[in-house]
Length: 240
Image (cartoon, rainbow, N blue to C red):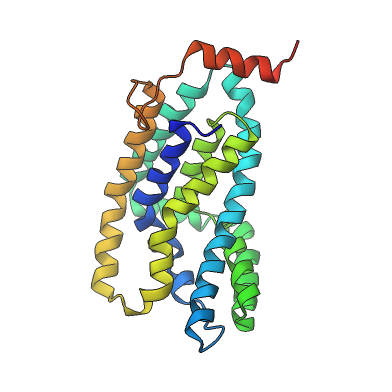
């Protein structure tokens, strides 16, 4: 079921779009031209983003299913508040330590084959290749995606987790699509300004998560989690 909490995924994706441009922008901007035809060019960019959304949907289903057990145990609010605090700590952590994470051998071992496959698909330069690039792009290490996964975990079930991640992807769609179309014309100074805005926008995400966990009764931002809802969820997972 689509709840106000799940719809907040749109806000997470939208406000985090600057982070997407900073992390995945180089791939999006460098996408090959499958044809000189303008329609095919635009189609390739749309297909690339649909590839990202497809990967996000599968990730959301998996983590939504895993998270359903945590919700039954009564950890939903604790999870969301904890995630918000972790995000704040991540923003305040000096860049040199963040770089060490992305340069860690395990992270590199996971991301290197993906990047190699993306490079091979770039050489093909076809519309189907664009979709596959998007699929693989969705698997690359990304802090914002991890934030969205935390939201999928607290969503309740596999379907809700999938919807959460799809809505998150749709939230990032406008900025990422614009980057694939106009990215080549964005100058270095503007990119630096976008990069500087990322920490502030990430802090907004952290505050949204903490507010969600506090369940203050604010529609879409901090909806109440009723005892009745938790009871119904428990009955669904533990049928008599």
